[in-house]
Image (cartoon, rainbow, N blue to C red; front, side):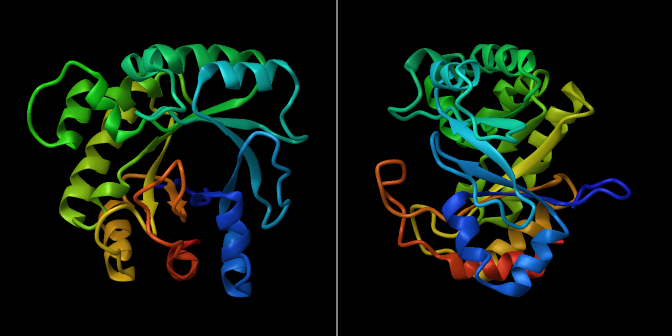
Length: 252
């Protein structure tokens, strides 16, 4: 992965996914050698395992502000995640102007000495004036990651919908990472992977190919292990086995 001398690869996992992969001692050992962000919903306690750093996630700036300014983050939290998407959890005004929303989130986190991680979803292009072509090309045309990288410490490229197509995944992730680093040479760039996104089932070979195709451009990955629910109605059953397999091969 694109890490400098002495730097560790970064993996970001939700609390439940982290608990599932840590059931494999070999994966736990490999994660100990990596940097791990543990994503928590507001009010969730961290696992405090594998040296993971707690990161509380928010889909709206107002909720982020309330938690940060209200002292509601778990002890030891040094980063928060702003995850704007075209869904009911992100206000329409933020969907239409995610750059301004990220700037507002950055002002809040900066005042409290927190690292801001922003994961602008691919579907945000549907809320913008746009040209034709594949959604990922429209996303690059809008330079969403580049503009947001100016105010964030970490940006995550939600590329998981392309992981079945390694050439497209590679092209998107590399171009988005280039935009981010051009805007902020110090920003950390992660890419998204999912063990069970909507659509055809994903194989371990496809996930491995996506990682190999993009690892030179990013410092790590947000490895999603979602289950079907309100935030992912089209997802299949969780596949922690795939997550353990990927981490066993690529975690450190």
